[in-house]
Length: 222
Figure 1 (tube, one colour):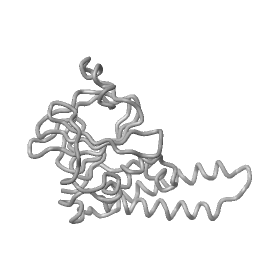
Figure 2 (cartoon, helix red, strand yellow; figure 1 turned 45 degrees about the horizontal axis):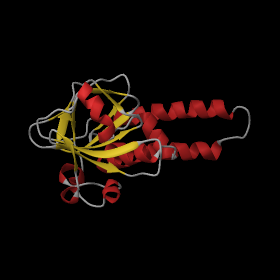
Figure 3 (cartoon, helix red, strand yellow; figure 1 turned 60 degrees about the horizontal axis):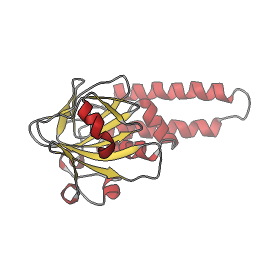
């Protein structure tokens, strides 16, 4: 199955510029390991961005020039999306395990993960980073089961690593990246075929509709 949900232009450009916090970078880098299409887009961004640095002048017109140049880069990325051939996942993307850099962060692959129970059959593994902006964790949702309905206090990136889920906005399978913000209220549900394992990165606590979830949220750290 090909990847349908990709990194946004803004995230990709920030990653290329080295300005993303560590947590966001883990999600982007792991998606890139699974997605040839986005690796191609990144190469375009890095190539054009390098050219901008070489030609930039130190005068009052620099900021205006940079703003226009990054607008041109975004336009070029969008054009690449339209022109790039449909590329299927590599063998690693289709049926492999955890790609780098995520494998190094958790110290192994799927079979060695040490899950912590969240309740109702769900599990998590918090991932330590050096940045104070994001919270990073692996989540395992039981096959056919939902995550409690919630909205977001900030941004949430969810990258599917195994299985799949749907949440009313679409179906997300291995390699797909959902980019949610405060405008989205949803209830992801794992598809019946297998447990869904995701990498989730947030910069603010989730906002659960259920008062029970709100009561235990500090204990769960989500």
